[in-house]
Length: 290
Image (cartoon, rainbow, N blue to C red; front, top):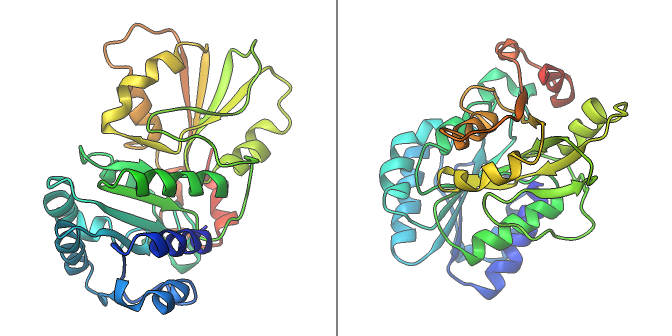
């Protein structure tokens, strides 16, 4: 996904000279295409993440659309106060691009697990969560963000090139996107992020029941109001995410139903907290999604 992100950003920068890419002394082997073509639009802030977010806010306040690219935990938890005060509360067009979502960098140790980022980023009232499930959703998310500059969090899998959609889907915040559906379905799986492939292989492949599969790549605090109309159509909704259950996407779904009268059973398939302390490949660590 990261290579496709850079390709899309290069295409956008050819048309919009206000697009800026910031990194914190990483991304080499990926970002060179952008920094070579647009050297005046690329800055390496060094290993100084809080300062990098300050730079991003200043550039955005001067009319730039800034993309901050880093490994999952570095531009989020390390910069929480700057993200809140400088970007979200000022409603600035800064997109935090988080690479290695979930356990994508698990081989570097559990300090690199990105398993609480939804919890943090969705707590900021102006921030849009963009969590594409495949490369077509990624292109759709970037298209939306470029057209609607705002505080946003683009959460990418490190290396997947998985594709489930034939074309770029019509994406808007809070909207469920159908992957497959039967009119008689009373059960659906709902995913966000790069867990569609895992959901199909692990939870759906040998399931002979009548069910549907949907994904939601764009969501956030402002878009809970749309969820009741979707959820109330089903007797059971199984929410799948590569994140801890607490504070994650399923928690957000539950919050959207606050004070609503509904009979839908909502189940969670999320990463177990037993993964803490574990080191290994993404494939190995995804076994903790249950």
